[in-house]
Image 1 (cartoon, rainbow, N blue to C red):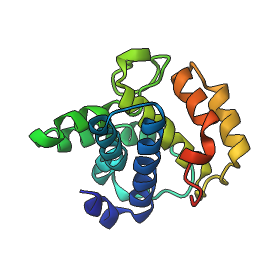
Image 2: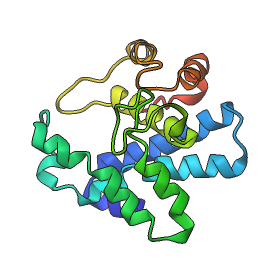
Image 3: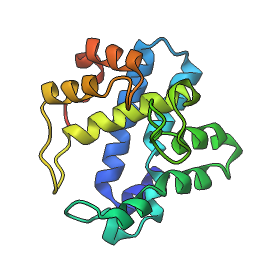
Image 4: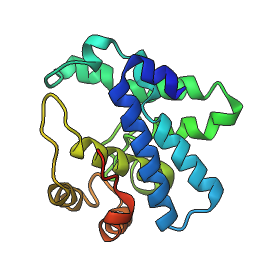
Length: 181
C-alpha cells in the first residue's frame, strides 16, 4: 500500500516511512510490547494512505490551503480508514489511521475524541507526524530546528498532545527523532 502512495506522492511516502520508524522507537521507549510496536509502526507507515483519494491540485499545492481545500484534505483520515478497514488483518490499523488527527483537547478530527479516548498508538503517531512535518522543508514553510520543534511540542502539551508522550519524546529526543528529515 505504501508503494501506491509513493506512486501518487513520493514526499508523503517518505514522510510516512519516517513517521512509522519514529513511532516504533517512541513506542519502545514507552514500554510497548512487540504486537503494540508493530501496530504503531504499521499505523505510522499508513497514516496518510487516505491521501491517495485527495485531488493532486490540493495535495501538491505550493502555498497554504483555503477553508474548502482544508476540509477536503481532512477527509484523508476517513478515506484511509475506509481503505484499510476492508482487510481483516488491518482492521485495528484502520482505527489508528482514523484517529491520528484527533487532539488531546478534543478539537481534532474526524470525531473530536480527546484524552485517553484516543488510542495510545494514534497519539504516538500524531506526535511523530507533527515532528516530521515541523522538521521538513515544504514549499510554504521552512523546516524548524530541533529546539524550535521541542518548544512547539511543549507549548502544545495537554492541548494537542498527551503530556506524558511529549515528556518522553523530549527526554529521549536523540534516540527517537529521525535526523535525516
